[in-house]
Image 1 (tube, rainbow, N blue to C red):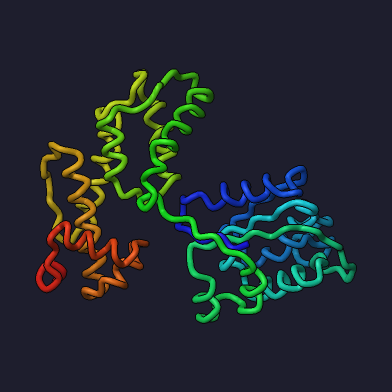
Image 2: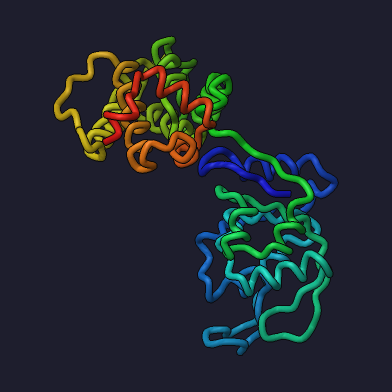
Length: 298
């Protein structure tokens, strides 16, 4: 299974759901961020090694495939794996066996492999970054997880879930957020997706003793985001007063769109792709903010 989605959209949550609803649910679920594995040690991490197989291999070591045997192995950002490790991974999937680094002994494995990427793996193999044969092996089934800005109807349920969970872990008694806060949440583009919303709810609950989170409680967060937007903008609105948070967020969104259009020389399709937006959504926002493609993007 291939899971596609921007960072923070919940790819690991989806992978766990697949695992928990399968006949492997009583076996291990192991998640690995391939972007954090050293390229030199990637093969050892996945397949293990024997003592003396390379400098620093002081003892035999189990690989992640051995730990996950019978269960599910989730490889996040799989395109970061070196091509030689991808070749070994292909053999494991085809033959259901592997060798530890430095060993000639085959080890059988029965592991479901779910992979995730925030880039299109088909484009990655066309660019020589990913093996085409491995892509076709993985691509039996693919799921695209949309960014939070495209599924804002989920925000209310997610906020309630995060509040309930943090009430238990933080010993709080928060009952919800105000209507004003929910309106701001629905207007904000959430570049960090569900993970950003989760962190905001947790940090806000850490700082408040109120039962209902108010606009005042989250104002600091969005003010900081607007300051960052102003610093990064080519035409920053320095010291501009933020009297209405919804207006300020709209200004922030407009600045991001103009910046993306400048970077793409006015190409709406490219700008939409860079922002992770559907082309029609970008057209609608250009129209909404009355952005003049012939003047404002220069």
